[in-house]
Length: 390
Ligand code: AOF
Ligand code: ZN
Image (cartoon, rainbow, N blue to C red):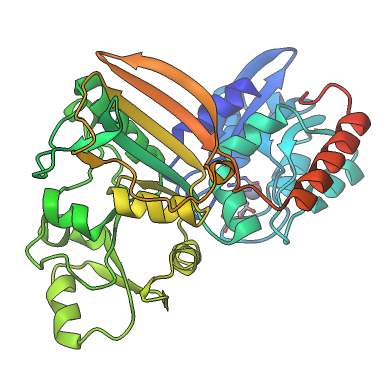
């Protein structure tokens, strides 16, 4: 399953709205071949893995073999045929699965069909890692919005620019290279219109000058303040730029921004600002499962205030800018310390002279009654499932 996960990771950011699944075929403890989900509309991971083994060892190698797959094999006729059928017809003996597919068209039916065909199926192998691998897809299925990661590059005291707005390259080359890789692993990157105007960025994915698959580029811009001449709206990739805006702008203002292919995506307002929750719902409906938000501080704070941020990639440069410089995160309007946004740190690394920290955000603190109920439920689950993750 670790090998299947490694293959799945390579497909991240390229399969939406499909999850980036990985699969390997084993026989006698030896891995014969594997594969990952191809871009949407293309074959699923299981089909790619089976085809790879067939090519190298012939059809007979699949008989009695084991398949490890990060997600439950599908059993529906979508854009591709059902993976369960391919597995059964190949005569495989065993299937190991990370977790069930919550898609109502599958949801346990894949497992039942395999078992009915006499295949031994185990569900829940490396389940937590597989769920993390499919977090974007699961977020859309369960919450109707993409997984949302915030990337912030700041001085050690959390500042991104001097008071005058001077801000370029606070962090070093290694940090920037990781940012490019992060972009390529998400379906889309997102910025606020203030950042679009101030930095006129291109938001491409070019680690070490090598160009990776370009994510969709989104500007949150309810007022259409991004100038028609911005690079995001005019460069060769303009067709991959989406302006997330309110309804009701004049045809002339809209046309000026979509002249080179940029797309305007409309969402309703809430209290005079773009309703971010509904806007993210629109993005999910358009097939995006993960978004990397790159600032500015106002957009990051709005997402944090509304409990819409799931993960934080924090790059800290060994420098201090002081309280009169601009903060990486705008006002959160907390009244009490217990309202603070709490993080669970997953990873800390040195990147050249900079520090990198990845953390997941806890959901905003619920009412005390709800917390007690959740704790009780968690202890029941722990008692029922000794050992935790398999
Ligand atoms: C698998 N293996 O690698 C993936 C699966 O439109 P389709 O035909 O591509 O089907 C998409 C659905 O298939 C998707 O919503 C999810 O439930 C499942 N994804 N299933 O067996 C894969 N990516
Ligand atoms: Zn499938």
